[in-house]
Length: 324
Image (tube, rainbow, N blue to C red; front, side, top):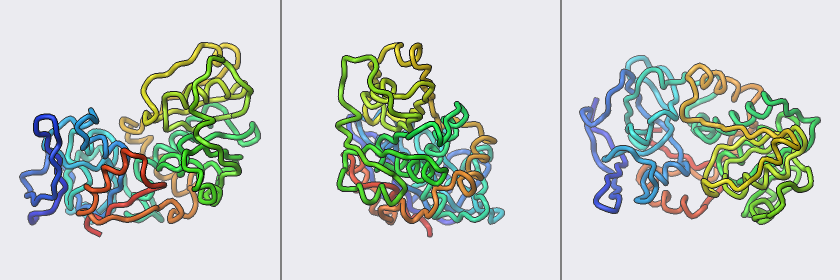
């Protein structure tokens, strides 16, 4: 194994220094699977991991990148890895090589290559897991519309596409109303402004609207989802970009039988993880993956883009060509 390129973030006092470095085999962490990385992607959590105030990174120096796809060096098997400590406490996907524990590894499902896997990535997996949680709680297409918050983001846009493919009436909420045509192309039947779904209210309950909600936002948006969910509805929440506080009452739960479902894609047991990935190429497929891609970046351009992510830049998925 030769030396290789990697984006490295290293904390220095109150700042984080980021630069492309040449690393060697001894710089890789412990693990029993060595992967030649072909593709990664950019997620909000990646930006937090390299931000001085992000409170995400648990190691320094750190190679960010919470997901990756590529080839196992010893066997040639095509695999993907995401979640667990990857890109947070364990060197991640923004490097030409990665070494990880074998029980983090997911074989690429049939019909999915490394680029397609990262078009889905952590965001697509989280979207699929959110839909699984809603349906396990009893939500079906005949129950009524499903609201997707943060719909132009990676989780939101993939959720719109998955739900539409499964026959749901999808209402997409976004602050980027100029993306209405794109969201409708993914399958949304209606697009509403984020102002409607994120405002504060003194009312514990409002008009019943949603059979289910996919919520990768958090904060006021989660409170809105709870007080507007239909009787017996469910809210699957997975994000905190809108804040970590939740101002609500017990009213949605005890008067409308609403369920608040937590969705964690980081620690999902490996067998469930592999099952959901297999379903992402079958009954949970979002359809044409290229519709979700906003741009592709080479490894040496990722650092500059990470600052834009915290400002809400972009839409859909941003891919990183590492060794492809």
